[in-house]
Length: 483
Image (cartoon, rainbow, N blue to C red; front, top):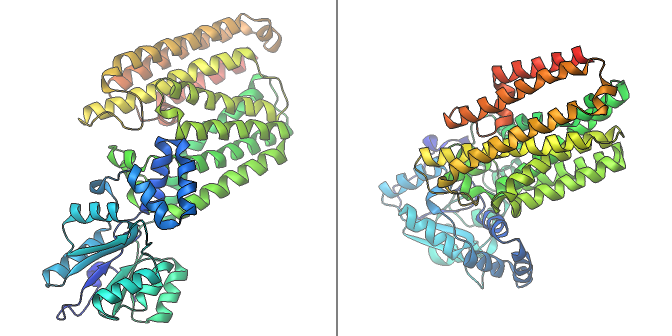
């Protein structure tokens, strides 16, 4: 029976205990996966300790992670329908218990935060309370078929087999089929919403526009043949798939910080709309596909993409927590897209272009940090925990952004005076008209950020902003006239 919490009808005249699973049922997350990524995000060298703990068993691994990594029970993505079931059971005088394979430290924190449970069961350093182990413990506590159970995945099938009533929360189609084979009257809570749209949001497809930077070398050297264009398009998609895979990893590492953020708290993993294990599998597939595709396109381009993946992984786990190192890393990641565009069409990369890219993208990265800090300040939130910046840094971050941006314009003017420009363009003097447009756009971006009118990402802002699009169109027209 597919239904929602409002339609669930259970005989509550009997005071049969209601037992609720935690991961995937009460919350739309997996605390083992979540805490493991949080642990590595704060200390990547801790991976050795995780491996050593895993050799002692899953219970030891969970204990090791829980001892080193806290969770914020108040910000976990609780399922509203399951909370409704719990509250209705309590109103009818039924005892309610939380039973989870997560470590006892986490389960206790959730139980104490919600104050809805009469007791709880959890894994400790000796026993992993999952599947048949959980079924045995609950049968010993309440008797076989002496409790109703709310679960969500294959590990819960053993528990459902000894439960009186069976309730599944957003199970996979495979688990749903096996549950109905066990009990045709089982209750399944379905998830509403557009799943495709949720995945598109998780993959941040709107961010793919940044990868259009691979076309810059093609335009810079005036390579307009079909083969070069097709190679650049292939490079665009390789970077896009790789970036989406890393975005998922970044979201996994930043789950706790995202849930505290005024806008990032709506991301699919932070809200529990997509299971963490599913996201991990998709991330691995995307990165593998991008890497294999890149080497198939051109070995040199494949090497550049590997460099991009190494840099962005380092950024996710280490560099983004280093003051100023993070913005230089972001600028490098953008510049690697330009280098990749040159590698795929086998043309040398201009030193002027590299210098301009580094300064320009450093400025944009600083504007991004400024916008994030301003949001924290305006919302009266504490300093971000996943960045080494403070709200009092706003003024210096803005000054550094202005300096980097106008240095980019200076580099561009020096490039216009070079022999390269005179060889590429028939009317190179016309290109000087680009300078005031760049200065106007950078100044306007800084002022809009100060006025709190800038999006979290200035590049995405530029793609949607009419004035920015008009400026880009004017620059394109100037390039055509100069040619």
